[in-house]
Image (cartoon, rainbow, N blue to C red; front, side, top):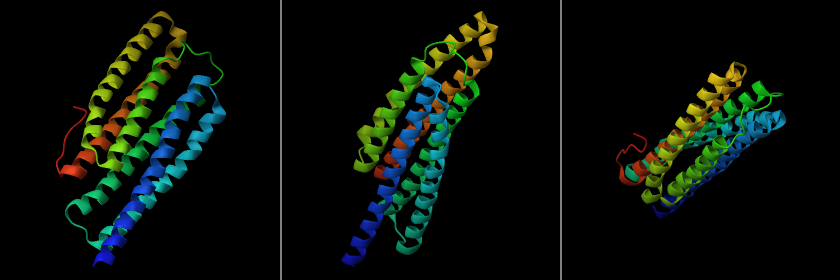
Length: 220
């Protein structure tokens, strides 16, 4: 019986390590997508798009491994929550990577143009989002609810910055009709980053569920 428990614990650890690898790739994708935009570097944008295949493959591996654990180990209570949480977190990580690809595609669309404004707030949003992602994964690894709850106030910062960016871009479009197309594309990027933060708060909610068995909204 003890040997079975040891085997199951090892399998749960392997599941956790797969998620850690996926989160690392996702954070790289997020960072590089905004870097590609800031520098209008299409080559870096293409690398982000290509990296998405690796993230997608990891999500498939995690899902298949999780299903296998449920079928073979028939876990209950917290053990079952650990597996279900891994599936949910991998889904949120995959969506973050998809949003990063969307940002990289904006780089493609506006390549060769001069930016209508220096990118300051969008990189700031990205920095906060990356910090949120690290905190969310740390909260998962350590099963730390207090860390997960920090995401709520950080998400508020993202939402506030998003609104400021939109207001600024609207003013740019009002003053310069030729800037409308690019300004719209940058507004999409800000929206993508706002959604990234929502997915990260979802991870925090998953951690709270893992530890307590209760659902709590972090981004009302």
